[in-house]
Image (cartoon, rainbow over all chains, first blue to last red; front, side, top):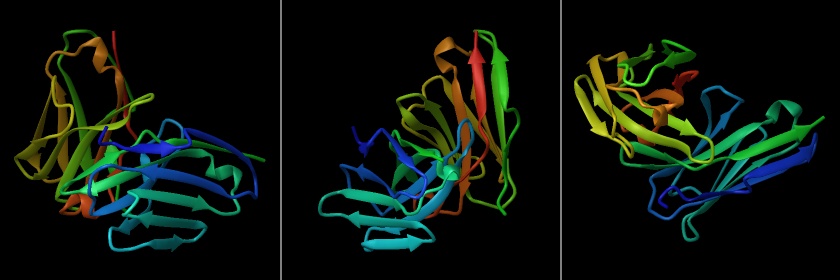
Length: 109
Length: 114
């Protein structure tokens, strides 16, 4: 599938722990983006990393991109209960984004 | 803040009905997108538009059409609704070259076709 894969499909951690989600893809990209979706709502953009970048930070978020391995990871540090959501990576190419199936993160208080 | 609104949060229609889903954005974005989201399948692109009256098929356009008469409004049309079109529909907008910029999403319309 051109969508690639996110790993794991579900992740459950305790508040204060770090959460790491991975994304792999198969085709070339211009950039890779991460989005969050709270239950039953629209998606919210978190961070964008371009194909010539290797690492990017935004607050408690850290994203890495390895184009040689066609993979990316999203690290959320010091997680909070409010971080409970589904997280999607999206591969950017031409006009379009191609989304993965997402990782469901549950942060237990 | 960018705001993307969708005409309904929940919609119930009968098989064979013509269904219109409306999306409006207030940030003068060139690009607009329609996705459907199904459990286990993630988001799949139905259609997108990069300018008024311009449209491109996405990955799953069958059974759908779109209309963009004004820059701020992008409509998704189900000509004859079927039960397999029961889904969450998400609209999004972005600046030009949509893949290079973040997309802003509406809250979604959960459509049930009975």
